[in-house]
Image (tube, rainbow, N blue to C red; front, side, top):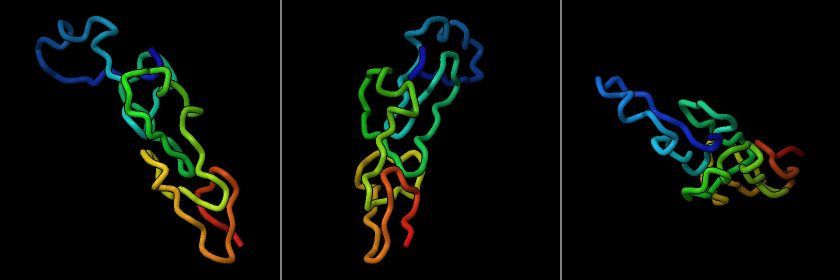
Length: 104
């Protein structure tokens, strides 16, 4: 389901070990999978983070699960896993919530 992914490997017994949804893994912190049948998870965009590392796929099934950095801060990296990745704007610059950078 959404929020999970299934890693492909080239073992001969691939289909034996990948034949039910329970074989899928929940996306990790900083990532999400918006649809069923995903082989990889997508990074949260710049200006956001997703610190949840639980086994609950509903916390990783939409870009909306990524939390925006607060106004006055910015998030320059994708796939951020913590609010600590939201950096303060320097004096004289500002930002709206979810910003990738600060402006004058």
